[in-house]
Structure formats: structure tokens, C-alpha cells
Amino acid sequence: MATLNRLLIALDVYHDYRDDPTHQPLEIRKALRAMGDTQKPAIHLVGCGFEEFLHDAYSNFGPEAIEQRKQFVGEMEQRLQTFAESLTARGLVVDCRVHWTYPRYEQISKEAIDLDVDLVVQHANMRQPFERHNLSHDSWQLVKTCPKPLLLTKDREWPEQPVILAAVDPVHKHHKPMALDFNILDQALHLQQRMGGVVHVVHACAESARPFTDPEAIRQTHRDALDELLSHYQIAEDAIHMVDDTPVNALMRCQDSLQADVVVIGALSRSRLADSIIGNTANRVLDYVPADLLIVRPDKG
Image (cartoon, one colour):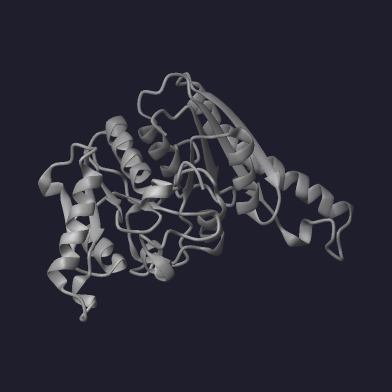
């Protein structure tokens, strides 16, 4: 993702983007910032809609429903076209793809593969706009199935100089063979280069959780591994945070204290999030962290 030549922006076709329809929704604005000065990128606007009572298999499906579905799809196309026209006016290459499909996340993942995009951008689709954000089922499944880097955006605007927080674990067994931490750091730094700001790095040590092992020895092992990883990068010492806590709590504490705007985390496979970052309590990070989430995968594996 050093250069973003192809972006897929998944837009919610069910409402008018919380704004006047002539304005760009937040996910498009953030995608453009993440793109930086890329020359002539290809932007794919994708919208997926489905209503059970307008589907062929519905018991009362008939001529009236067919006409309603045509109207529904036409409205989806018009909404996407409104945004495409404003992007085209800026000299960008844009195409719109509207699908009548369910589940939505499967189509978005398929498009990401077929178009071979460098980044997928989608609003996080929260179930509750409160302290516990709760990703919708659709967003959760997209996290698990999308094979490309995925930026889940929340409702906060990015400041002029955003804070980007990269979560790494160089002592994890998959660190060296899959090089996931390198990819996390590369993505974070490339994002910083394109839109400014500062990169911080967080790693959880949690030596106090192992009462039968020398805490200092554990801490030193983690420190050595972190130093080796970061020796390949130029990260300021005050931007490196090794936190004595569980991975979940360390990331959440660090995000809160730094007021990070984007958190970069890793996923080991298309079926589960990286144990090295959040393990079996992945929902606590994705549901509670108010920052945008950039989820990346190893180059291989």
C-alpha cells in the first residue's frame, strides 16, 4: 500500500450519508486524504442493496415488486453517481458498481479481489453511537473476510496532523515467518507520508500477568524483540510505548492517552484476527476503540 492506485469505497446506499447528498460522505473524504498525491488513481464506488420482500424468492413477489426493485436500484445508482460526478470533476477516474445482493460483505470482498484494489474503505456501521460502539455484523464479517487492507472509518474527522498508532507484537510466533509487524509498520508510515501526522508504536508486555517467571526477564525479552523490529525504522523514542498490560488494555489505554485517530492492527488470516494483537477478545478493541481502524494482513499467508 505504498501507493494507492486502486481504491474501493463501499458506500451505504440506504441513507443520504448523514449530510446533504451533494457533499462527500466522510468515508470518501478520508479515502482521498489517505490516497495523498497519487496520480490518476482508480476509485471504485460500490453500493450493495437488498430487501427480502423485493427478492425473487419472496412469496408475494410479482410485477409490482419488480417495478419497486427497479426503482430501488435506480435510486442506489443515482446516489453513487452524484458522488462520482464530483470526484470526476477533480480529475479522478471513478466508476460505480451497484449490486442487488446479500450478504453485503461477501460482494465487497469479491470486488476487492476482482479489482485487485490497494485499499477498501467502509464506514464502520455501528449499532450504538455510545461508549460501546458495537460493529454491525456486516462490518465484523468484512473484517474477517476481506483479503485487502481495510480502513473502517468512524464518525470523527481527521485533524490536520493525525495521530497514527501501530500495534505490534514481535515476540509472537508468527512475527518472523509472516512478517506481519513489518507490514503494520510499513502501512502506518506510508499513511503518515501521504497525509502527515505522527506515528506511534504500542506493544504489550504484561510481565505482571506471569507470576512464576522473572518479570524483569520477560520485560527484557520483549524490549529486545521490539528494539530489533524497530531498528529497521526511524521511530522517535517518545513515540514507542511498551505497556505492562494485556494487548487489549494496552492498545485501548494508549489510544486514549494519545487520542489516536487511526489504529493500525493486523489480521493473520481471512478467518480470524491476529492473536498477537487482540486474540480471543478482538471484539473489545474493534467495538470500544473510537479511532478509525486500518486492518492489514501479511503479504503472504
